[in-house]
Image 1 (cartoon, rainbow, N blue to C red):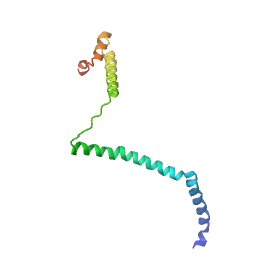
Image 2: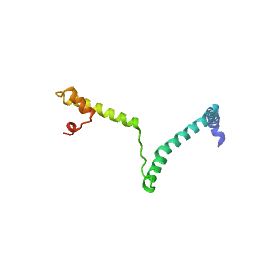
Image 3: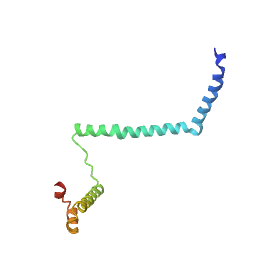
Image 4: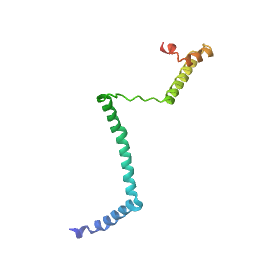
Length: 115
């Protein structure tokens, strides 16, 4: 039976050996494995472990939810909101004076937007 399929052995063995050599040459396999492991560990930590720890901490401990405060991020959000209000007032209420539009944007007055 093997004598009839000798050509398969002659082709498959060298090709498989070549690919095995290419994978192990230069330690590519270990680099690939370590990279895959690092990505899987990072994904697990961000998407499974940390959320489960937060849920557990919030539901079953006295510490409750963590407060995340970042002064710079808060200032950026406030500045962005002021710019959006000013842009909206410029577009929708051009008849208002520039000073009143700027004052409303700086005080984050939402009464015109809510109407």
